[in-house]
Image (cartoon, one colour):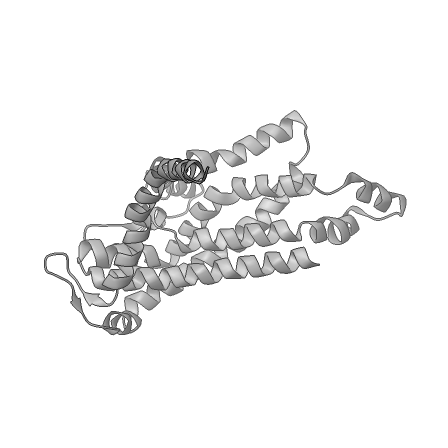
Length: 297
């Protein structure tokens, strides 16, 4: 009887063994390899040489790293706040089951499905600094001079934030609509009987019950914004630089890409990747902490 039980367990183990083998090969091993490379001098053409904490010291002494961190933090804060607030406003405005509201939700959610390289290419035409760019065409129609949207550092962050908000706004709206529908209707009916206004219902019923959803959407938006790459890469990436005019579009992931795959300084790039990973883990911990606190109430 015992050998049959062990034989059954062996069969079960063989069934899941390919998954664990692939996970170890393409998941665990690259992570461990990257952690080790972050303490080495490695330029892809020679064997890695152990240098200890030198990569991290060089990283924190690099002005471009701090510029990338500042740009990323500014982008994250701007996109997170604007996309969460507007997503909630849209959910409150188009949250019913009417046909018009259903089509409005589809329209706002389309960028989350149809985003990517094609969408960013369209945005590159919209904000093109030449006169044929749509925004500059509109400016010319009202008598304004063309703006260098992709060449002026003052326009870099507004353009990136606009594209970032556009890409996540529909997703946030859908999550908020789901959260709104989870609120019992009898709470609103009781509030109406007590003479509560729409604004009072929003403050005392809607927002308190949406608190877990607000925390989830806010923190996941922060994590996604911290990993932004293809928007600044496609809009501002050039042959000589990836950071745009005066590095105003340089983000942490584009900085990592620049050091690792253009300068082939893979040791320093691995150190930057682990700094980014630490920041993302911190945001994830904040997410779990806040959600756990809300569930405990």
